[in-house]
Image (cartoon, rainbow, N blue to C red; front, side, top):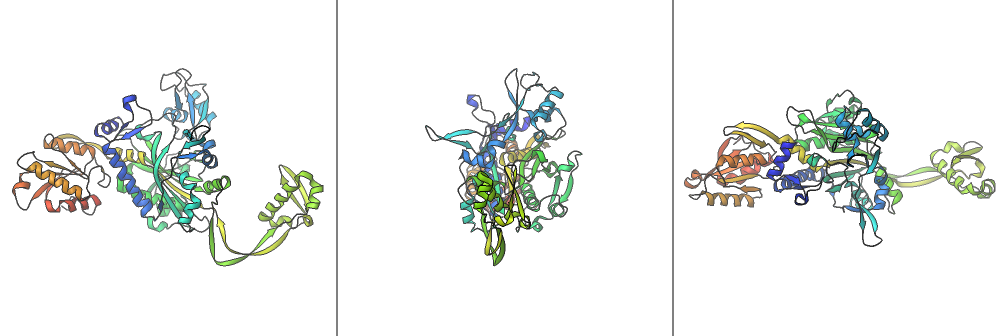
Amino acid sequence: MTDLVELAKRRGFFFQSSEAYGGVSGFYTYGPQGASLKERVEETWRERFALAEGHMQIDAPTVMPEPVFEASGHLDGFDDMLVECAECGESHRADHLIEGATDIEEAESLPTDEVASLLDAHDIDCPSCGAPLAGQPVDEFNLMFETNIGPGTSQTGYLRPETAQGIFVEFPRLKEYARGQLPFGVTQVGKSYRNEISPRNALVRTREFTQAELELFVDPDGDEPDVSSVADVEVTLYPAENQPEGDYVETTVGEAVAEGVVDPWVAYYLGVATEWYETIGVDFERFRYRQHQPGERAHYATDCWDAEADVSAPDEAPEWIEIAGYAYRGDYDLSKHGEHGTENFTVFTQYDEPKTVERASVDPDMSYLGPEFGGAAAEIADALAALAERDRAAFEGDEVTVDVDGESYTVPTEKTGFEFAEETEAGRHVTPHVVEPSIGIDRTVYTVLAHAHEEDEVDEGERTVLRLDPSVAPTDVAVFPLMDKDGMGERAHEIATTLRGEGLDVTYDDSGNIGRRYRRQDEVGTPFCVTVDYESVDEEPETVTLRERDSTDQVRVPSADLASVLADLRAGETTFDDL
């Protein structure tokens, strides 16, 4: 990580923000190379998860009012474990300290009292000053940034901790755009904020980050994915039950669904994601999908699989980081917002033909319930109505018993007014379930860099190279004059301008010898370099030298064909070997 972070800073990929004022932990600025790389990763995600799937895209505010997060559960359940050093006052993620000092991989899933006991048992010290942390309390710390909306007695708001809530709260309007037809998906790429206790590892754990999320709304009783389209995609799974022994499952998406290892909807998006990860250059020898342990899952998830990448250097112990989560959220989100909000968070699904159904109802005799049960009469009547909906058989005897606030009340069946009535229904109201692929763009960018970063030797000696896939490389091509004289500089400028006009991202460099210029471009991942030499200006038809980054091989290409050749290479429609 040290080498990669130094390269990122030197070559303009990313660096700590506000360094002129000492920097702020957990905030990073993307430089010219990094901003381009990040944008291209985002764009490939949109193409695959939004456009190719036919989903909508929105852009919601990053600040939302407090009631949103009361409904979503983030105010009560969005916490990390904090331990504070009594000696120096520094705060640390207690579960991270446990993971660093023991063989426990997912201390986050443990209760706080057990984590506190592990700090004691393993004599773990403060990373900042070395003082022992034994005996220090482990507390829950809410990760949301609080703010005020408006002046004076302003409304409390929070910076969103995930982009998902911006989609959920707008569901009543979004379902209209989808014409009330399930399933439909809504995507969003944007900033989220979490007040991390101890940001670390560059882009891996920050306080401001970019998420790319898809919320797919499905009818749990009718909608199924077309798994066949990704059935043959090979995946490495790490199920929860296999994790104590460290056993992976090498399988296909289709087999995982057939064997019940993964929910079909989640499995479908594991297949889609695997194809996407391949296009952006993730190394599958250092990649897995790990299932959350029950105690580790977020409060809203019924199941979740994380995409994890090993970003360690060669010959070092694996360093697995989470780069995405693929969760089945059930109806938690829409049900909660339906309870707290004023809009309708269901979808009316129409039957092919109207159905006649028999409904049970009660019309309690309040002249009996009132004198008999006093102030509890109204609640007993409500309990009878609820019981009639869920259990008709309870009314078959002479008496019916219901529970209200822990007390049982028995009512003669004849006093409940229980009866059946036939009704004709055109359809039903459904609270959709949610399937969510949630991608951490910054961590994905870091993974792409880590997997592309290599040291090798070429004729000119050792070099550092980023073997970035051409589809996400910050620069498509670098153009050089062999020397800036005899018309070569002018012609190189003309070629660079022409290529930019064709939509390619081009850098121009005439500084230093040609070998050093190649090394600079190799280090930032530019896949191709064009050199204008004497043959380019003296001979007809005009040709230039085209060099490939990975092999360092060179071919001569007609200048007139250069733009189309580079476009085909970038799109993968031709290879350098073909040339």
